[in-house]
Image (cartoon, rainbow, N blue to C red; front, side, top):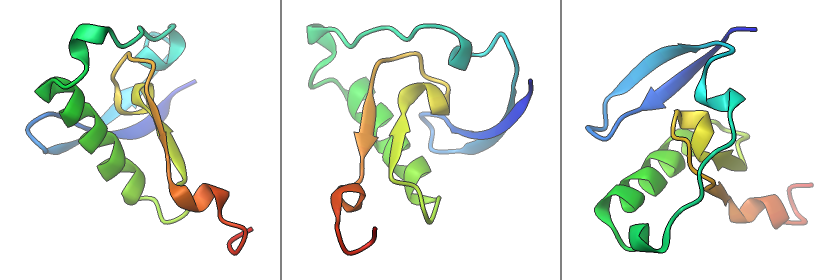
Length: 86
């Protein structure tokens, strides 16, 4: 199976990437270590995830592997819990 995703790198440049069976989506992601908390790298990952999710009108959640980063991180928009939009 091949899927097309948009990956955002740390330079804030968008690039399309073809994902296949050997992609980061096929493997178990690594946990975030305590040393990573508060780092610029982690902040950039979270900003990239939010940016990618905001581009999808109906997007409510995203995981780091969806933008090509093998980390156990996900974010959920508050509207995912909103009763008005259900």
